Image 1: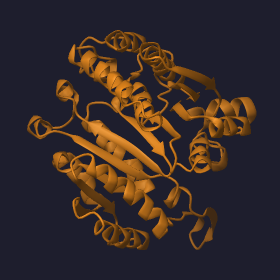
Image 2: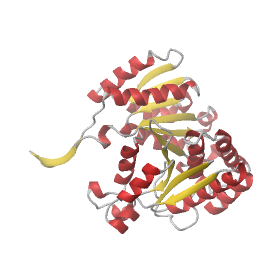
Image 3: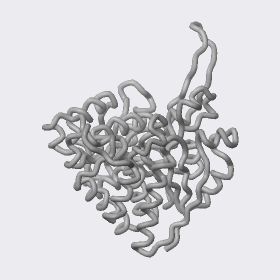
Image 4: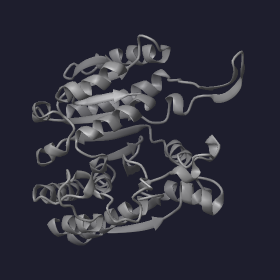
Length: 355
């Protein structure tokens, strides 16, 4: 089989970690007889430097013509003073919107070999962490009306949270359908005691839950959820929530696994094409030092193999290779817990060897 993959290395450590994932995909192609064609484009801060905009039209068109997109990371302090419409992160919002990628899937699982790297107390970590956060991706405050004005106390600014029944229903179905393939539990996170948008979210989720009697359902307020993720993360299977809450809670959940450098994500729509990326940022402070952990990006590529291309055996082979290398004791700096560590390129080489 032949697949066209658009690569967006982006900024900071993005080029390093995407390069590692490409090496793994090429190894998969050689092992299983597939042809992966890569087309590298600019988006984010590097695109601003080159073209004056975070998302050039050529980049967007190539994404639309691809089978899937693999992203590194965008942004950094260099571009923090730019106006909102020119910030590097606007590129991600533009791609998600144009490709119709409304569902972001972020698995968080604590490997027993990395329990010492988790900030959780040993007895809590021993209960296990294995959850999937399903985040709505194209609605809510990130896409609602925004602006600035003048008020009694001076200049003000506003961002608007808007959700429709249709948007809530489609992300809810992703969560319930996924739960059927996992532990059979869905927890919907909102702020229904304060926000009107959350009240509609909860009402819609309740109606949807009635269609899935085989799935155990619960609601939880977002502030309580933030505490429960630390106090008892083992209770969660599939979490479904809004764009803003999902952005925050998924980063919190990532720390339970020992490092944000381990966690992959997939952004999907109605079709098979998706955008796959590690959930961490561009980490410009370590760019070029060779210590960035490529595992999250490699596992994102594995999610692409599975979810967009239907190559389940190939995806599992990559996941098993990562697990084997970690079980063998190899550690990048972020998961070394103060001990010896290897470079990111060496971690990639060991994963390919295991593959």
